[in-house]
Image 1 (cartoon, rainbow, N blue to C red):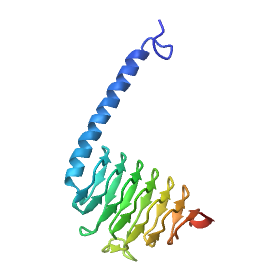
Image 2: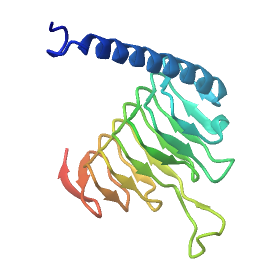
Image 3: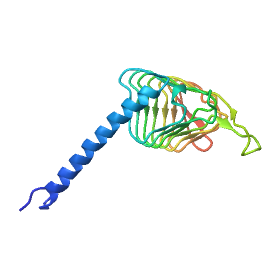
Image 4: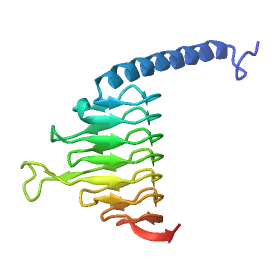
Length: 189
């Protein structure tokens, strides 16, 4: 009696996995509907999966074909700050995006898993008022897994790529590959 993976109960397990997949798809559709209705602006074909945390959704503007995966946090400490994301941009799981200093992400960008972007600091007073610093990420930028972009970065140029695990502490010019801690230019494109 062999049905699935040479185990008699394998069919039941496969059926349960199928039900879980259906449930997750249903949750993602509800999440997309609810969150896109609450955003400041939202283009066509945007997907916002379940378990996404958004603070001040009216300050967020999404263009067309945006994909925001599960377990992402879009947060700000300043209610008037804004986040703008361009066409065909993808955010992978577990990203933490702080847009306190205003953040613009261009078209065709990819943020891999567990990317952290910080656009403010508190100076010498950890409990003091947030000091915002703007960041512009131009078109066609790839940011690798486990990368952290710190508050003193104001610009990431188009067609640039940031290697996995990098700590970006200064501006990145266009058409380069940067990597390391702190991130340095390792190649021109």
